[in-house]
Length: 273
Ligand code: HEC
Image (cartoon, rainbow, N blue to C red; front, side):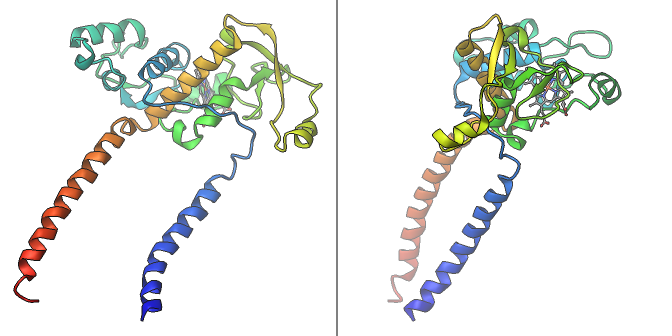
């Protein structure tokens, strides 16, 4: 009797767990390239604001975020009445620092508009040999470590049309748009890839070294790359900022409901036993 009961419980619990485990393994395929840890924190509002600022200045010209609106983004990042900003102030901040696109009539894009831009697939293909992807979901499809490593992974390669290649995106069509900040990097030929296996136990991938300094120190540039990654992670799932708080309320509510249900059940059954 008791083994039967155990079986009845084990299977419904074990089978989904195994399926989830199997899926998590499969989705790991293709992430075999050596990436660096992004160490982001989507609840760090200053980091999100900084990431958004860099994104609007350096990326938005090519990559749209077609599911996001400027004013929702500002609200989520703490530019709201709770932190002492009036609606007019937020609008002014957005217009000055974040919105660099115009609508069809040539007026500056409105704060409530979607973050679209007008890079057509045709002109992108002419310029880069490929379409420029919208980056709304890249935080989920590629993952944070991948984006962070990608932004840090550009190096000089004269055989490529843009003059650069990337350690984790071979023969990439995108130019290194952050080179002025980072400086230019070259592959460190003296680094023997098998060395890492002998010493550290895991391969750290091709090594790069900065051969011409940029405007920022390495640590400053790491922060910029991290903040942009953080911003793209938020964009891929804006609701994650409020999900945890909502989750706690839901659990508290269920606890209270359980208490009442228990009392009610006792009341119903009290004459029968
Ligand atoms: C001059 C236009 C241009 C700018 C500016 C630009 N990119 Fe790109 N980006 C591209 C193109 C083109 C590709 C596609 C590359 C390919 O498929 O070979 C791309 C690809 C990417 C990808 C990979 C998407 C994927 O999943 O395949 C990411 C991530 C990315 N860009 C992030 C950024 C970020 C962050 C910035 C700002 C710091 C930026 N890009 C600025 C043109 C641009």
